[in-house]
Length: 504
Image (cartoon, rainbow, N blue to C red; front, side, top):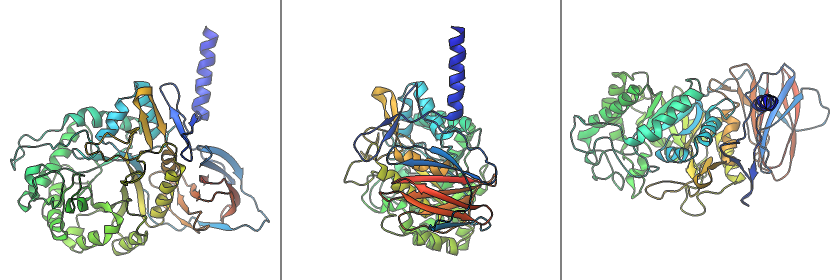
């Protein structure tokens, strides 16, 4: 018995060092998921610095590889291959972080698992053996991914005397945030966005719907509402790094079911410079990063108009963008925004697949959706984005719960009835960036291979270089990486794959 226990401990230690492998399952949707439960979940070892002259690759692909590791050595190669040129001296934007969102729906699903399985889910996202998320979003109140709509002060009173957090904060958000803080050794940064304003503050008297503008007389009350939320979380020993001016204000202009607060350019300017900005800067949260827009990148001209007033721009630290219209508009708007406002960071703050009214919301195992994620992240990074934050951390098999049946997909899908969860290709697409391009990394110059094989490269805080390459072809691709300080690497990309290549 004693010998058996020793063997089990040794095997457990080996698994921790080498990482547990994916248990794949194919649902016939053009790819596979990795199945996790209370007893097993795939892991990936922490990155270890290599000696100069060596490199390591991590590959995930449509055929089922997940962070497959392979080491190699720099060396001259006489074969005429297309080069990807790396110039590590060139420095562009610095990475702020990567993560997802602590929605009520995510909390409901994570809590529905056996404790050992939910522990593995959280470790998959936040630990060193996972993909190391470190920048996450928290809804300020309810969102469309809540079981019901709610505000923190339903009765009309401008003094907000009865402001209090909801049960959902205490049962679905705060415990998971604390767990994530523990797993990241306190390195987790949080920002918050509001979907719902109390009905009595709005022109249309509803949480959602057309012409859902905030009453001008409630601008300061709304700013105080934000501050009170931050105060209440601070009492729970949770502080925030950032705040946005509100989630997708464009939805408040149309008859949408998703709750939102609508703004005109002039109204937003007034709110920022007269209410939100001074309220935050004169509070216990004065160092908070304030982000504007928090909407589709096609609306960047709108936020540029908002920032035209210096009194407004002085309060804004960054611009938050969503991905839902990215197929309709190219990334040049991001570069244009950076050129006009180089002092404002650009951060991707929401993305998910399956959000369109047609087609399946959840597609288990879809490599194509993972590919869309990777392509968009590379595109954003190469046009000055400083990170990319996903939507729900976890959803159920139908893509909920959501009180307006606004079902979508998620990198992790929970099957509560079987006590297991499924890591989608989008999970691994996220991980190729969050795991290997840590906070503080700086983008460096990399030439592009071709339109079907986009590339981005970063100088890591530990002095290493991380190169992310997406192969969208249905066939393998061979090429070279040339770094004048290190030499040449010949790479072989498997078909339909995503590869992270690191060297020091």
